[in-house]
Amino acid sequence: MSRCCNISNDTQAEKERIFWNANKHLLDGREDHSDWNRHTTRRALETLMEMTSIKGKRILSAGCGTGQYEQLLIDRGASSVLGVDIAEVNIEIAKERNKCELISYQQSNLYEQEFEHDNFDLIVIIDALHHIQDYEQVLSKFCWWAKELYCFEPNAINPVRRWNERKAVDCLEMSFHKLSLINSLKSVGYHKVKCLNRLFIPRGIPFVKGVRFLDSFFEKVPVLREFSGALAVYSSR
Image (cartoon, rainbow, N blue to C red; front, side):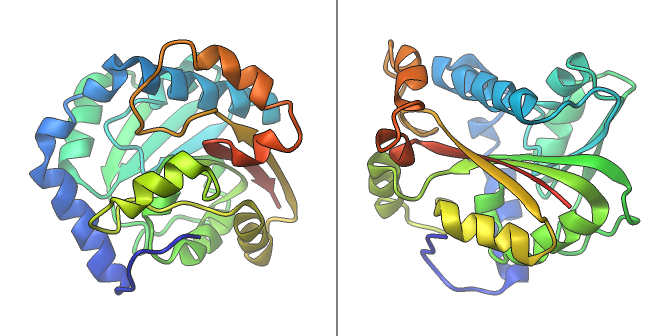
């Protein structure tokens, strides 16, 4: 994983919470309204459905942000979804957005959160794991909480992503190397791990019309796909 600083887990978690609470103007559900973010959401969920069935499953949406995915997961067959995020403002927006009785939300620090063994069937974390300083500690918790895990995260070797990271002034922009992430998942107890390369340009870069039609091409070319914008990883115990 690409790192831009070295601070304690508690400090990093508090920094994340303060950042999002102080930048509500960046939220308010606006991410849904950009072509690129809608495209990313669609590709992340399409790939999830390719890799496993969610019908009838109890899902934990970790790092749920403002609640982009929870209703979509219910629409695709999940029996219940709990969204967890460290920022109070994110949870407020998510609750306002999603009124379905099968969806609930909780403000929580994943380092401190506790659930019973196999409390969920599947954990979904989309574009959020890279915000966690000690992500292996959290992955170990995930492995206890659910048999299955789906991650959709930035690809560290994508040249556009690397350029974007170098401009970052804090620890909010990081990314994963495929083998490093796979090895981390296996080390905490996920024995079956499958990774797919997705997206031509990573999230957070201004959307270029027509790029979406290039995704399916680049995802199939053996060498080019390694430089994709995102990694979709499904793991199970």
